[in-house]
Length: 283
Ligand code: KIV
Image (cartoon, rainbow, N blue to C red; front, side):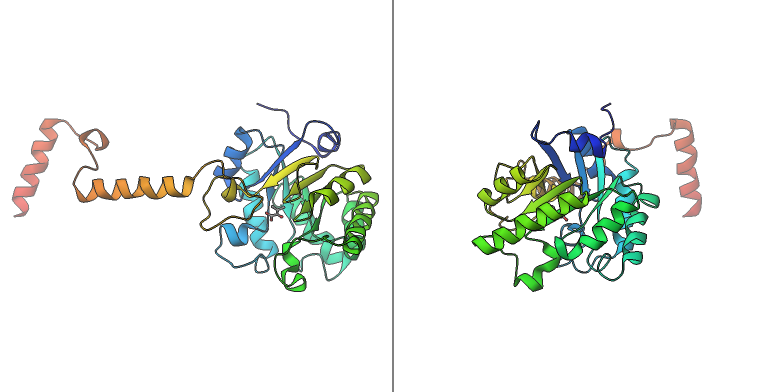
């Protein structure tokens, strides 16, 4: 059993051994991620696309996220569990934001929350941190801004946009976020930000220079269908394996090969005989 990962332990990894983070949305996937050695399990709002069948992340609610985060923490992982604050749960008022963030710790057992955005969200980030709730920032291609961005597009490709993102990263780090996800930005910009902030950066589609990397569980394991984004490396094809396994199972059922004798419950011969008599009396 590994030592429980904590926020200070994550912070101490800046510039050291790369941090490993993966999403999980339920207890069995959390157990798998934890056994494999994840430092951080992110209960991402990507549960929307990867599990709940939505087109984007905008439909998930705080209740949905609490439900999935609690399922993950019930697996008692050693990894730090970070709950993702969904769209509109940290945009309306400071009070509502802190209350929503607190639910992830109190009701779902998370160790921290993550939210998207830079200086625009600074007041909310500061208020959550002031309530003793650790915050992970998230900059670059922020999926909750899909409509504002005009689609899922790589961000920070021009000098002005890169400068904005760098300033956002510095502002979040100064406000006290304990780590920063950098998503969908050029590798050079991620390197620049990683050098400029004192907190660990965790990249997804942000090149190799971040302090750690994160991918979606269903992408790494090939559970999702279709062509994955460029930055995804599939380490298994579990979707295909699962389909083949179920095809085999259904063939066995149709052929009368399942269940076998060893997979059935038996009683002693005498009682069985009495059962048959029962059957014949019914006829
Ligand atoms: O919701 C999510 O999965 C994320 C990522 C950083 C992978 O926010």
